[in-house]
Structure formats: structure tokens, C-alpha cells
Image 1 (spheres, rainbow, N blue to C red):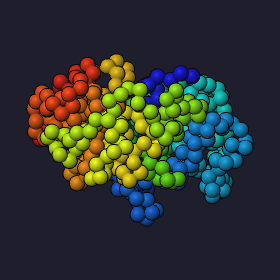
Image 2: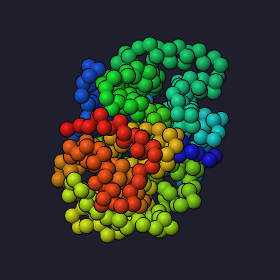
Image 3: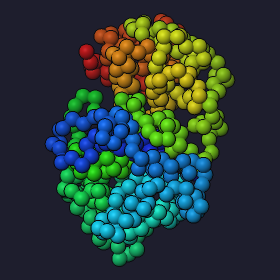
Image 4: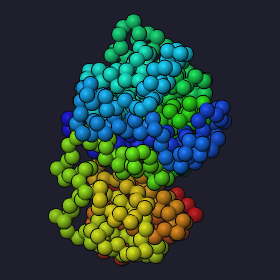
Length: 459
């Protein structure tokens, strides 16, 4: 299956959204519901040893499923499945079912990875979703829920739309009506209404309710991509099983709006077992969607993406309005000034292309192509990126911002950064950037996206 750039973005968003939901919800698990406007943050959970931005073991198990798919394994294979049974989770979950009749909801987390493995085959997807669920959750409702959620994730990745009912026909006829009614309840009721969301049925209802009750906020700078954050925060504020429900919500939200809609402040600190960070999740998700095969340039699995054929990749200059920000091309990664300790990549880079000493690396999903479908979240990405550069600078970091040749993406981001955070009129900012990067010429889509910022400068 040949995926578009936007579909790759949404596939990557599936796993990023899941992990962000888990990490955001960790600090609020088992709490009572919060007000709609309550502030939530990735503060970690000290009682479980989770640092800010760290995902839990259940999300690690979901990542294992994606890892198997990224290695082109067939998740329906029993030998593959044996390697995916959480330890000691399987015994704990089975026992709790026998003892109380309640199903833990962690199988829904793993269903997102199943979706990425079978984007081209919904029948195989449903089979695999049932099989992976049955490893730890063999109740009929649990398996049905995993089929529904996995097919909804698949639909969102392929079509950029939310439709949780798209998988109902994959269930036996006698179970379709009960599930239709449950989904109707989720459409109608707020997330907090599902107060048994530690169980699989109400976890799915709570997650769908979190997505079904999004509010359009009439604020300058609000974009469609902001719904990803809002939906995950809705799930967290619902309380009780917030960690898992937010992760389940995040998987579908990420599949709908993409990795490019995941806030940089979340991506920057996101991490967890087994020693992975946000760029690793993007790599695994994309490889799973591509059945283990990188593209013709070796992305996303090669250690280096070679750009030498383009020429002019070695540019390296200081930002004219902030000496703590360097601007350049991808080739400058091989000769960074010693004081640079943070990198913002506006183009694809290899797994080892950014120097290992760089602790803060923010990979931005921004395609240098003027067609609207190539960057569906363009406004959000531009503002989110420059605001995160400002956050890095406020912490004292010296930041290197680069694309391939510093011709289009880097100048656009640099100009917007100067406008929003250095009190420089946008037109002047862009002219000053061109003075230090004479080849600079943002593509038409970037120029059009920057124009409205003339009325949106933040000081």
C-alpha cells in the first residue's frame, strides 16, 4: 500500500498520541472528575516512579505490538503473539476477570498497533485485534472493543476522519445493536459519565466521548489541530482510569490529526520503556504502517538521510535577532558550535544524524511542498514550533534550527520566531533573515501561512 505524506503523518500520530495520553494521564489516575477548564500537565506520577513525560508499562506493551509490526511480523502468528504477552499482566488480568467479572482496559491500548499493521486489510486487522486482545482479555466485549477501536484507527489514518462505527459490521450481527447503543450513549454523555472506565466497555465509551465532545474555541490562533490536545485533556479530566482512557483517546486522535498536531512541549519530554523517545515512536509507527520497509531514501530507519545531492546543505548562521539561535542546513549537524545543546529539525533526519550529545531534539513534521494536503496542520506546526524554540531559549538553551538547505522552512520559522518573540514586524524579520541567508525563499504555502501572523504578533 502506497501511503501519502498525510497518511504517514497520521500513522505516526497514532503511537505518539497514545503515549502522550498515557504520560499526561499518569498524574491524574484514580482521581475524581475535574472541571472542564481544569489545567492538566505532564507531571509524572511519583508513586509509580514515572517521571514527567514518561509512559507506563501498559503503553510499553502497546509499543511492543507496534515493534513486531515494524519488523513485518504477522500478529496473527501464535509464535509472534507469545512474545507479546505482558508479564505478569496476563495472569493478573485473567485472574481479575474470573474473580470479579470486570475486564481491565489495557487491551484497547494494544489495538492501535494492530491497526497500523493491517492498514491494507481490514479483515486481517479484525482477526489480529481479537487474537491480540485474547492474550490477556478473552471476554467477548473486550475483543469486540478492540476490533471497533482498531478499525476506527485504521479509518482515521487512511481518511483523516473520525468514525467509531465503521467497524460495527465486523462484529457478529447479534452484537452490533448493543454496541450501537453504547456508542450512542458516548455521543450523548460527557466523558465523566463513564465512571467504570477501568473496564474495557466504558473505557471505549469514555474515549469516544472525549472525542465527541470537542468545543470550537473562538480564539486567535486556534486551529483544527488543537482538537488533538483538547480530546486527550478531556479524557484526563474525566478521572478514574485517566491514564489508559487518555492513551486510548490519544491513539485515535493522533490517527485523525497526525503527529504534526502533537504539541512540541509534549514530544520534547516524552519517553519511556524500553529506552525510547518521541522520534523512536515515529520511526516504529511509520515502519509498522509500511510493513517494515523504509522509503527509497532510507527513512525512517537509516542512521543518516543523505542530502548531498541537493547541495548547499552546510549553511550555518546566527539568527539576526537572537544570538542564541543558530540557523542552517542539515549538513551543519556535523559541525555544530560547541555551545549548541538543542536542535529543532524541520526536515527528516536519520536515527544517528543529530549528535549524541544533544539532549533536546525536536523533530518537526513539516514538508517543503506548497500543496495544502502535504501540511494539513501548517498553521499549528509553525506557531507550535516557534513557541517551543522560545521555551528552549527561556531555559537557557542554545538552539540550532535547520531544514535541508535553509531556503524555505528554516527562514519561515526564523521569521515567525522573530515576530512572535523578538518584537520584530514580520516583514522586517523575513527581510533580515534573507540578509543572513541570501538563498532564502519560503515556498508559497509558507508565505501565505505567515501573512496572517502580521495581525497576530504576540509580545
